[in-house]
Length: 558
Image 1 (cartoon, rainbow, N blue to C red):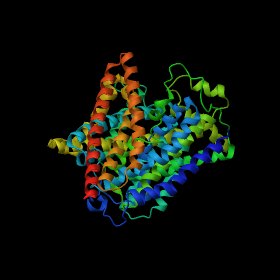
Image 2 (image 1 turned 60 degrees about the vertical axis):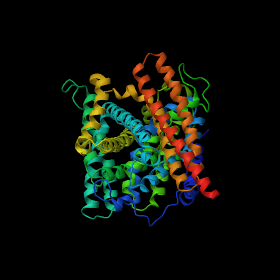
Image 3 (image 1 turned 180 degrees about the vertical axis):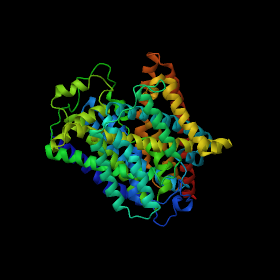
Image 4 (image 1 turned 135 degrees about the vertical axis):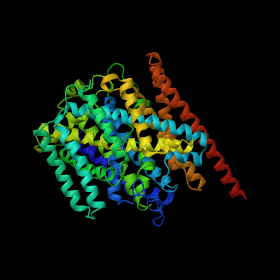
């Protein structure tokens, strides 16, 4: 099959989902009110709660939720063949991710900007909230620690990406000041800032930068990890308008252009898909497609992390409630488009099936490197030098991961501060202390479990997929409970909840057995902790759901 057909079918399906299905959800299920006073106005503090133009907020939300996962997941899952990955990404975006991301923003906006974890205490029970927040903290720990490793590896392997990656921070700070303090219209900062970022890619090619081979006993990868967490800690404490919003926005513009170039190259070159539709010659040790496909591809189909961003940072910046559809559902569309082009890059970006098989020699291979190699080959058909094309895609992947770290550390700080309020621990309510605890936990995992190279986050990474999808199921269940309390239809959130939760539990059990038989008892303990907490929250929420339905039925009978 030619790649242009795959791109057209996938993008067309997602567009129809946004045009019609999201409109139905917005009007009939969530029932958005343009006159509702959002927390950004009602609780404005110009640090976390700031009314934001929906395009800028879309850029923040899209880049914060995307990360490197919609590249890594499809880049690995293609080992089962491109058809299963394609179907899950397209239908998952329309009926799962869009409803989930949109719903988490709406639910938080309607409840004073509370995170999905804090909301659990209001609509389920306080015990459920405590356990839910443990699952959330562990997920954020995984995301931040692993993305730091991912970024550090790319900066070591591709030193030409260093200048453009860090230039994005400087450009974002200037844009934030121009828009929010100098009152400059958004157009010219966008045009000039985007141009500067692409100029930075050019300079990165001619002036690659590297850190020393050894510094304070740390190798280059470990040095970058420390630098990244110092940056993330600083960024998490700055007002959102100064760095988080403009960085995510300008990165979103650049990344959107990158997607446009990739899709343009696909339309121009129309490469042939060399990967098998269904791979019957799987490498030894490859796990079964069902249920593992549905946790290997999380971001790009549905991801619990998105609910944390939607209810953690995005909801606090929503100018009008009606913007939630544009920001949340269209944000998932953007991520689905990234996952789709990744599928195309890693299935049609190689010259032959043999070349493709040389990359996919075992489960877990592929990911970002396959995306950079395959996508670079496709971009080169536009006349771009191959090295420049590969640097461009590396910068894309690193910027996605970096913006996720920005949001992830800030969200971890929120969780720690919420614990301080819940348990009346005054020091934890302080933003600086909470940030130190969050970053300290990540660095402890990185260096405590991984040693001097700081790669400890990769040890816990195998549990990310199942934890992420369990969290997505729990988020959909909380949203469903809110809908039932308000007497609205809940089947549009409960149906995807049942599916994604079932796949996640099956995957967790499969993983648990493999970890036990391999003697990895540390991960067995963590996996059991996550499964136990998720089961308890699920049972509590299901009980609350049944109570609300009985109460609604009794009220109708009267």
